[in-house]
Image (cartoon, rainbow, N blue to C red; front, side, top):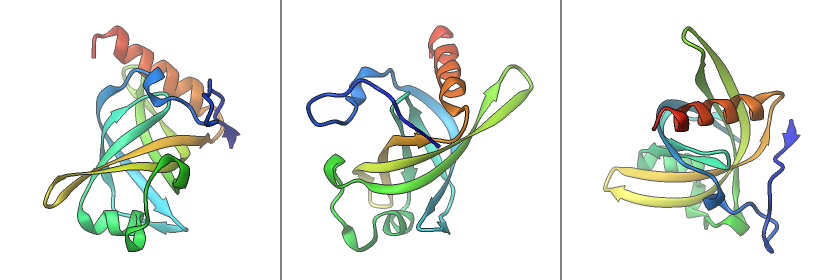
Length: 139
C-alpha cells in the first residue's frame, strides 16, 4: 500500500473540502478487524474519501460499543469497490479508510463518512481518472 499524499493543514490531515465530491451508485465491500461486513452502497466519492449508507446493524459492526467517531479518533476499515474503466471494463480499488463521521438519516439508515488513508498499488491514478471523467461529464 502507498500512503495518501495530499496537502495538509495544521492538523496533519487532508482538508476533505479540497476535493470535488461526485454522486455515485457503487457498492462497497467492507472489512474491519479481518471480519467481512455487509456490502453497502456508496453515495458519494472524492479523491479524499467516500460516504456509505448502512443499517444500524452494520454501523454496530463498524463502530462497536458506540466508540466516538472523529477525525482525531478515526476507526480503520478496509474498503474495496469497483469503478468502470472505459466502456466495457472495470477495476477494483482497494484502500484502508478511516471512519470519520456518522450521521443518522432515518431510524434505520446512517451515512458514514470515510477518509482514504492508504491505497493498494495503482489505485490513486485510476481513482483520479474516474473522478475527472465524471466531473467532465457534468456529474
